[in-house]
Length: 167
Image 1 (cartoon, rainbow, N blue to C red):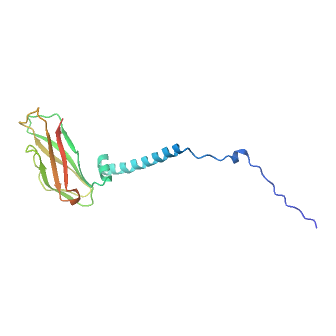
Image 2 (image 1 turned 90 degrees about the vertical axis):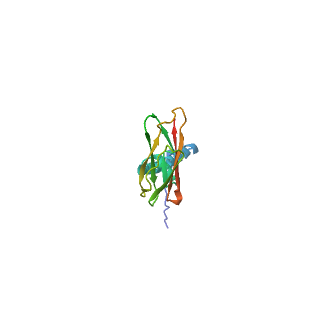
């Protein structure tokens, strides 16, 4: 019986194929991961900033606030103490899923006029509230630091307040 043996050819691997690539150093992976997380967070905040019109409102929304008044401190500048009224603007944003109303205003000084109440703020909207401040007759050398607060009918965001301050 003539038997033939099967010969299996062996192929030598080149030295380039034997080389195994080393993983990136830990610090490089940490930097890439941190950058990816920061970019994702920036994209999320930017999306909410686009929706609400500012980064501060977006950050308030992400922190859980659904009704926000900005600015927290309104600075009076270029004051005219001979003029009767200096208007101060506040933006109140309702980022909740239901309408709210401003039902009450409290002030720390009779020089701050009350606004017409109630003021309704639909869900997903923001309004500008103009608070008139009477400066006529006040001493320009005296500090001016007064507070205005608005009460809403929303039990989760009952009171919004801000400071009116002169530089």
